[in-house]
Image 1 (cartoon, rainbow, N blue to C red):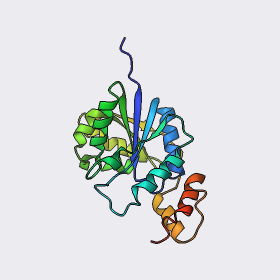
Image 2: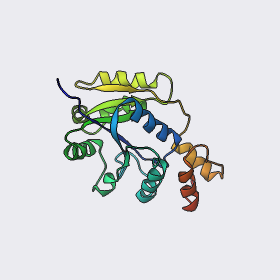
Image 3: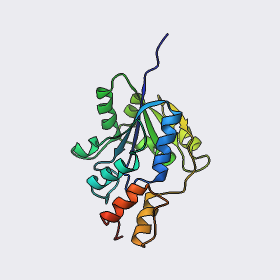
Amino acid sequence: MTLKKPRLGVFGGAFDPPHRAHVALAEAALRQLNLERLHVLPTGQAAHRAGLSPGEHRLAMARLAFVDLPRVVVDEREFHRAGPSYTVDTLDELQREFPAFELVLIIGADQARAFGQWHRHDEILRKAIISVAGREQGAAAGGQTELQDLPGGRWEPLQWPLMSVSATDIRSRVVQGLGIEHLVPAGVARYIEQHHLYKSA
């Protein structure tokens, strides 16, 4: 009988800031995907996005956001890598460090639809199972359909509570002087206030 490998989840993002939907997604992934551990990876130098908050702030906020979740590791490796951060490089490193584990990459439906344009996406498909979570009804299924069209892909659905929360909206509310306590974990709200983040557009 072949024993199943333990599973390591990989959940990356800007986390600028991390919010309650991120935490809910992590909780759902731990529960549904049978993960032994989940690595939350704030993006280092994003290849596709400019204007992120300094890494030390996003890393600190991620640690505050996920502090109460068992088996979650906030992984800062992408901040120590020169040049743009690519998912395939992170998977390479995790594969070497945790050879006994099966990797599960957790992405949103919008990311899944663009997956064919990801850097070395064919290698990602060989290295990890892809678990697609959607923000709205039907989104996960749509993203999975896109991945099914890519040869060699392995994917699993991830169901999670529908939450209308976005980091863009949170930053906008801070600029306008509106409350965000209902959108981010309490520790993150305090950190944003203490460090005067997002005060200007």
